[in-house]
Image 1 (cartoon, rainbow, N blue to C red):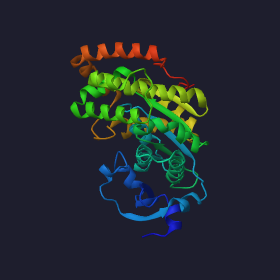
Image 2: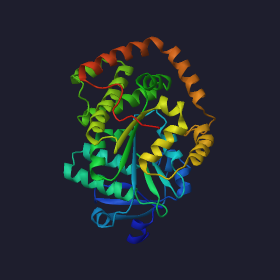
Image 3: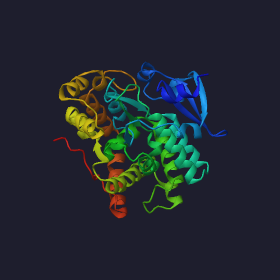
Length: 340
């Protein structure tokens, strides 16, 4: 086991889990190459990483906080893994994709932890995850979208952090759920169940209403809940702290979009560096399967799925837009990314 100074000062010791019974943070050994080898730094992909040690939360909070943080919130099915990999450049920024420690914050709250204890865990989690791998590097953290109801808490405990909300348009989100089959339809129900537990769905439905909705209606409710969360947060924070962008715009002009996100996060990436990234494997390989990928490939895949599920998707889109109007949820979010 490594000593406390090493665990706290060396980013190669990833703050991985909250050990709830003892209120300690568990660190595992994961170097930069280890991060690059997996799409998400979750137990599913890491397997059984080497445990380097555990420290009490009080010890972690006493450590000086020197990290620069960017937060990349996302709706799912929107290219967020691709973006966090694109911004992961040695000497510029380290990208963390869906750290388990932030999922533990959600679980801790759902199991009934007091708000102050949840905020304390969120604070220490972001402090530890924001440790740079090299001097002057920032850290861009992409949480899982299960944490979206807690986005206001994360930006509150990290007041210097700038955030982006990357989201799929409604129809694309529904196409993704439909084309990925039963497992994804179940995922959409699990996501909504979590949001309901957090009290994050304020669309005028009763609890019984969700049992009467189809899979794609449930998916649309989850999408609308995320729009509601980030519309409110974007207005509250303003464009200096939170900007929004949808996948269509990202893929139509990846260089301009990525460059604007880098500037928002304060990352030193010039036009040549951005052009190199966009021409490289991050934008030409699928972030999870590593198969050949392009914006045109994605459009073709989605066009085929739209054709297969056209009637269901069209009806749910009309229904969701009506729900959005009644609940005053904007389909176009405030603080859109500015590329000029």
